[in-house]
Image 1 (cartoon, rainbow over the protein chains, first blue to last red):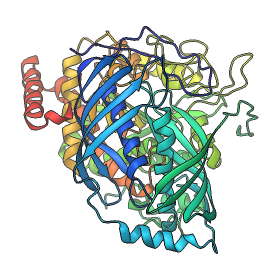
Image 2 (image 1 turned 180 degrees about the vertical axis):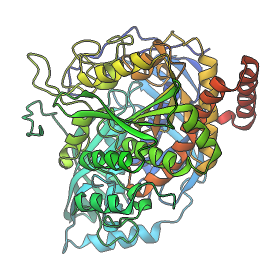
Image 3 (image 1 turned 180 degrees about the horizontal axis):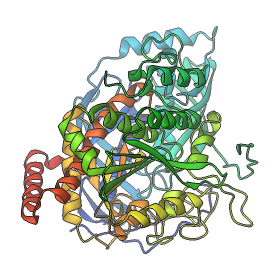
Amino acid sequence: MVLNSQEAATFPGQEGKVVEIADVMATGVLNPSHYPARRAAAVVQHYLNTQHGSPYRWIFLSTVHSGSAEEVTEGRKYQLELTMQEVISNVSGKCSAKLLFPGEEKPGAPQVQALCAELLSENITAQEEAFYQQHRDGKNLVSGENIPDSYGHMEPAMKPFWQLGGVASSFIMLRESNESTLYNMAHVANFTQLETEKDQLRFQYHVLLHEMISQEIIHWKMLFTWSPAEGVKVLQTELLPKCHCEVPPDTTN
Amino acid sequence: MMLCFGSVGLVLLALDMQKGHGNPDSAVWNRMETSERNYYTRYHNMTEISEWMEVMERENPDVVSSMIYGQTYEKRNITLLKIGLSSPERKKAIWMDCGIHAREWIAPAFCQYFVNELLRMYKTDTKVHKMMKNLDFFITPVVNVDGYTYSWLNESTRLWRKSRSPGPDGCTCYGTDLNRNFNANWGTIGVSTDCCEEEYGGTKASSEPETQAVTDMLDEMSQDLLAFITIHCFGQFIIFPYGNPNTLPPNYNELMAVGLGAANAIKAVHGMRYTVISPDILYPASGLSQDYARQIGIPLSFTFELRDTDEYGFILPEDLIQPTCEEAYVGVQHIISYAHDKAFYSSAAAVTTTLWTTLMAVWVSSATLL
């Protein structure tokens, strides 16, 4: 029995006064196109990218087939059947996932388990290895900015760095997600490659995340490493405060 | 030749266009190309769109007239194009607006595309001709002119959403979310009272001149308007009233059926899935323009959220403008055709048959749409 529910959107670092009405969470069988299932599915997407993402592997939700939710002592538990798609190779695969959104007593990141068939079947070893070797010796450290540009374009050489940014952002998006959020990476403001350390490529990124329910754009800085063997490991993240100090440029005619 | 956008007009626009962005080596989307097909596959700033409206009117005087129906906070004109064959009798009408949210650039691009399609086809396509004969289209390419202009300033303003009015006393931030500012359950849910936030709904319902301009037009035309369509991105949704849970519009089933028909039509073009939904079960919201339209009696009220689902989000690459517009056109036309046929062809019985046929076809063919 699906109950209608309303809720407040909140997000980190803000005293946002979002108008809220009493919370009644959907429980039982979920409608796959309604928001409770959709938001939980996005969390699975972020999880899969933290586990498997790379400059050549970036996973997105394709379809929610079915889902259910229940109250448990630790919080709220979801079960989902999904199809996910890897957007670089266009390979799709079915996934079964379980999530736990922790309750108020012990707040924290959602916990996810997912089993997917065929999603990771494309062999990207050669591309990852080539990218890794190309950038590991530190002679020509790469940097970039404004990816994509305002027209949605990026230099072909920047595309793996954009994809890598999306994957690294998934760590933040996973950590920040709850049942009232729906995140995606909106833009890479800039990135800089740092010296390779312990065989890991190292990067500093400034990304803009978009949260759908509040429509907010949230700036994060991240320090992370990547190698084909280790995948992405995020070392540091920093939330950049929203500037309330605008002096508008003179746009009046 | 059926081109309604003369090459002279296009050359003038090309000279005005911003230079120096994007990949100049790409042959696929050379910004300096002036053929008609390439114009509608690029994003255009407010100056270009304004000039384009002038060209549309000048080159199609029999069927296009422009109308300034309000001013933004920064005193820019809010302009629509009225498109239709002239008639001695009072005509039924369709309202479509784009660009109420500044960063949703694909929306004004679609309004331009839509106008061009009408003008390109009405002389030779019997269906489009019939629409143009029986209906007037009122199309606003950019409602939030200030916000859209601001989003073109530089990279850091690209993701601006709201209008550009200053906040109330004590709040230093700018802008009201125009699609939370309409007088439809204003200020109740899914809206912020913090003027620094993206969904700030304004100091009161219809506080913003842009909202007031659209409201005044809808009020004036409500007897004649068969459909209200507002274009946004992203997400690939077809949304209908209401944003407020536990309130259903009286013609909920009709709206759902027509929406599903539109989504089906969209899917047939490039395979893209658009979910048909009311916002209360997507994310609740109040003060929506679609809700206002429905509340004043416009029966078919829809919000389109165009491509994509979340990979590029607001910053949709230009090479996706064309396929997005192609499918959106078909989706919007489905709604317009339904509205037209309901008004002009007959009896409730025939309309009911159409409704049920649509519903059955959709249920049978695509249960996954729901």
